[in-house]
Amino acid sequence: MSSTITPIGTGLNEALEVARKVAPTDCYVLLTGETGTGKEVIAKYIHHHSERRGKKFVGLNCTAIAKDLIESELFGHEKNAFTGANSMRIGKFEYADKGTLFLDEIAEMPLDFQVKLLRVISEKQFERVGGNTPIDTNTRLIFATNKNIQKEIDEKRFREDLYYRINVVNIHLPPLRERTQDIPPLTDHFLKSYAKEYNKIPEDTPNDKIHIVTYSPEPEIKNDDNFYIHISQQLRDRLLIHDWDGNVRALENYMAQVCIFLDKNNDHNHIVNTESIEGESLEVQPDFEKTRAELRLQLENGMSDEQIGELLGDVASIRTLSDTQLRRLYLNDFYTRNGSDIGKTAETFGLQPNEVTQILKL
Image 1 (spheres, helix red, strand yellow):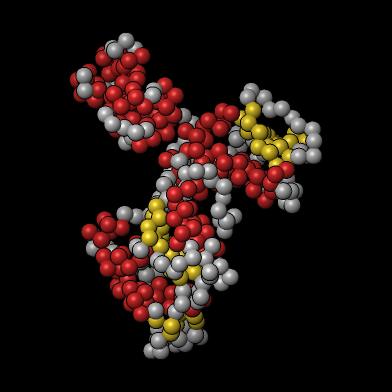
Image 2 (tube, helix red, strand yellow):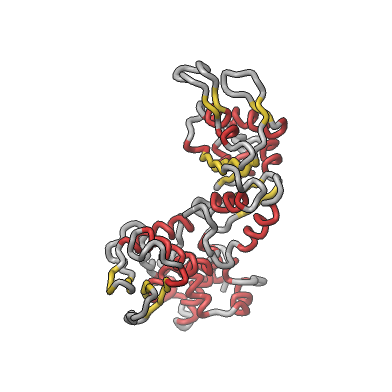
């Protein structure tokens, strides 16, 4: 499923627009963002929209290879180059020749090997381990990391000169909690895909014949030749306010589980049942322990941007607020709704009255 771009709404429009522009070129691209935000999907998107789309796309996660084997993995090795090298073996660079090589978690690459990679980027040549014959390479390189590269450079774990070579174009993928508008279309996409993959719906069914229906309080069973997956409004709301630390990958895994346990009403109607699902907990946190997403949703429903601006100054939208600012707003909301009672506010949130005064800047 990861070989295509899913219909993810507007949250990645900016990233996709940059990806479309760089795809026809061979410039180096550095994809940044948290784990699970879709960096490999964007890398494949660039490949499939490039002149190299008819050639191989090869991916390598730098964390999956032992440090003393990464050179052999990328450059290959000659026979008898080291103990156990019983035959010549080509590496990822040769295998991906004229195609695209995606190096994920590039910040985990050993520092001593970074020098060799820099040489390949500069000279377009490499040598197999145990060999001395230069091999030309014509491979497009795309890199990705979930780390702060500048911090890695400052702490001497990543070469600054390599960073400047690979960071020709940077595409940052925001976490799912910052693009909650993408959760409904992603949810629907994964429901349709996994319902077919797990044989709940015939695999050859066109997606336009599968309808995701939101219900409250009870599902309305349909009687026609289309297929329907019924999902409650309550679950929709919970999906929106969940933090999704694993981002799109976590949402996908959750919806895959949902499809395993779909309740079958009849051949054309299935109802989402989350009672048997393990893993991600969508329970709402109480009081001041509410998640960032829950606070944002609650405050968006009850406060205008003008009101937020009065409290915090020039803030364009509640979606741009830090955790500290969100909690201050939440505290202020409770304080205002309870007659500006500092004592009650302090007791409710386990604070001292002077702390409430300090937080609210009264």
